[in-house]
Amino acid sequence: MGNITAAITGIHAWVPEYRLTNDELSTMMETSDEWITSRTGIKERRILKGEGLGTSDIGANAIKGLLEKMQLNVSEIDAIICATATPDVLFPSTACTIADKIDAKNAFCFDVMAACSGFLYALTTASKFIESGSHKKIIVVGADKMSSIIDYSDRTTCVLFGDGGGAVLLEPNTEGYGIKDALLCSDGAGRDFLKMDAGGSVKPASHATIDAKEHYLYQEGSTVFKHAIKNMADVSAEVLERNKLTGDDIAWLAPHQANKRIIDATAKRMGLSEDKVMLNIDRYGNTTNGTIPLCLWEYENKLQKGDNIILAAFGAGFTWGAIYLKWAY
Ligand code: UT7
Image 1 (cartoon, helix red, strand yellow):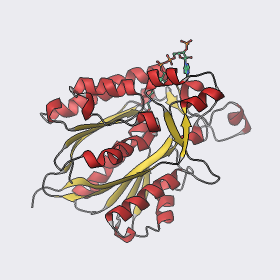
Image 2 (tube, protein in one colour):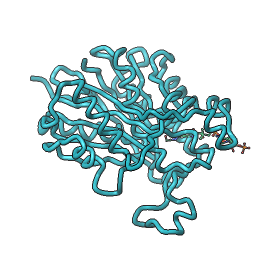
Image 3 (cartoon, helix red, strand yellow):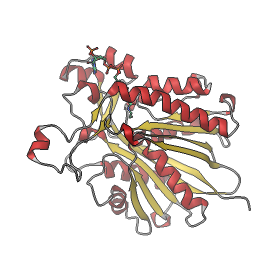
Image 4 (cartoon, helix red, strand yellow):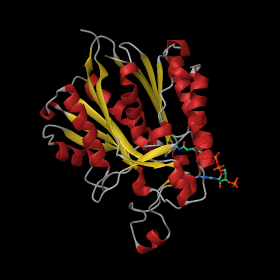
């Protein structure tokens, strides 16, 4: 028996029905389909509407679909790790709430918070439980209800984000498939450029924080853009290099979908042609922790066993990273 690697053996995703189009946004504020499309690549995003619904509903729907697709009994799941920046509540974890909604009794559950890079951080964390041999079936779910922290009168941020998420099953593999390498990075000096100021221990919710709109996402777009375009490209190139790979060896790039221009720069740096880049930002916008599983889900039918895939992301913190994996089915 060879070394154990952690392989994705199934994927499913879920998005809410409501489509908020650029044209609808143009009726709400001074913006245009032309501006949004040319600056970001986004045409529409999904919005979760309905009283009492949150990120856990997105995650639970994705996991229910995954279990059904794989004909798995929920009692077989050892752990649920949820990557989210918009937890249902500060505590308990959204992973625990998801477990309750899908009746997962044998799974230990926790959330990972690394903003837009969270899915990569959670996947890497989960892979260590699998590689050690201690656990056999772990679900990693990346989900966000970004509409819950977006100020729809701020045209510089509200056009970017949407709601959605996806879940993968990780299982041990001894034939060399699965996660081969992960490179995760952070720089806390970037924390002021993409953040939500209130609602935590420093500034608990108060009338003053609400009046100051401090429960909404704040982003200094151009600063984040500059760091994202450099770091996501650099980290992806470094993962290629240290695994002695070139763009020719890569079947697919599954990049975080924040801005098409950032994705294009990353692909260019890796020497990848456009047809190797997973892209769905036009239909979902930036779903934060949802983007990468949503991509893998939509491209699942095109993937072949043994395909070399790079996952890459950049987000608040700053956090960024890249994972190299060999598709297992
Ligand atoms: O996933 C987490 C990481 N996040 C990211 O990676 C996002 C990184 N940032 C970006 O993608 C880009 O910075 C944005 C898409 C957010 C903005 O694009 P930009 O090319 O950096 O535009 P800008 O912020 O420099 O704004 C250019 C102009 C400004 O007008 P003036 O000052 O030149 O007159 C803005 O007020 O565009 C204006 N503007 C808009 N105009 C129409 C900003 N938002 C809009 C809008 N519609 N929605």
